[in-house]
Amino acid sequence: MVKAEHIRKKLGRREILKDVSIFGAPGECIGIIGANGCGKSTFLSILAGIEKPDDGDLTFFQKKPLTDHRVFTHMCGFVPQGNPLLEDLSVRDNLALWSRKDKKALEQVISRFALTEMLHLPVKKLSGGMKRRLSIACAAADDVPILVLDEPTAALDIFFKESIHEFIRDFTARNGIVVMATHDASEIALCDRIYYMEEGRTEEIADTGNVLEKIKKGRNKHE
Ligand SMILES: Nc1ncnc2c1ncn2[C@@H]1O[C@H](COP(=O)(O)OP(=O)(O)OP(=O)(O)O)[C@@H](O)[C@H]1O
Image (cartoon, rainbow, N blue to C red; front, side, top):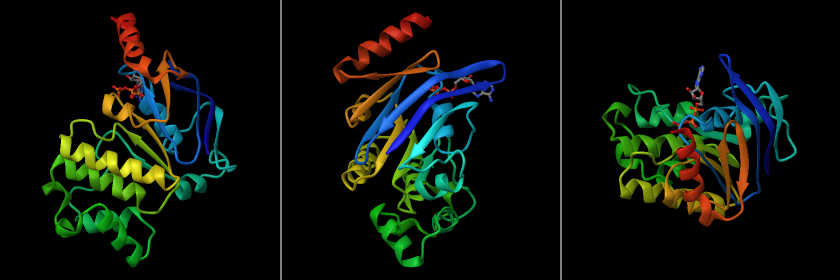
C-alpha cells in the first residue's frame, strides 16, 4: 500500500502543504484533485522522492522511503507534469536510460506500449501524445508497484487519452497502485478513491458524484 501522513512543505515563505494525507491499496487508482496552484504537483514530487517534505511520513508496503531513498527507486515510477525525456536521444535510448531491465524485459515494455515502429526516432520528432506515452513507458519499465502520474493525459487527443486510460486500468488490474493529479472528468471516473486538496490540506471525498460541485465551490472561493 501507499500511505502519506501529515505531509508539510514550505516553498519560499509559503507553506504550500500543511497537512496532506492519502492512502492507496494494491489495485487502486487514487485521484488528487483541486484548483490550479493548490499543491498537487508539489505533493506528487514528494511522493516520488524528487522533493523532501519538511514534516510527515511516507510508507510504501511497510517500507519507509524517506529514510531509505532506494525504496523510491525500486517501488515508484514518476511521470511529472512537464516532459522528462531527453529530446536528442532516441526512444530506445530513453527507455534504456530510465530502466534497469534486461533486454528481454525491455522488449515487453516496447511491445506493450506499441513503441516498436519509433524506437530509432529521436524524441524531438515525436508528437506530444507519443512523448507522454513514452514517459509513462519509461516510468513503468521496471515493473514498479506504484506509479505517480501528474496530469497524465493533459492536452492529449481522445485516442492517446484512451490508450493511457487503458494502461492505467491494466496496471491496477495487475494490483499496481496509481496516484495521479488530474483535472479530467474521464480520469476522475477511473479513480477508486479521490482526495480533494485545498489550502494545503486533503480531504477524502466519499461521494465521487460530488467532485465537480466541490471543485466549482473551491474555485469560486478563490475568485
Ligand atoms: N519553487 C517554488 N517556490 C515558491 N513557490 C512555488 C515553487 N514551486 C511552486 N510554487 C507555488 O506552489 C504552489 C503550488 O504549486 P503546484 O504546482 O504544486 O500546484 P498544482 O496544484 O499542481 O497546480 P496545477 O493544477 O496548476 O498544476 C503554487 O502557488 C506555486 O506558485
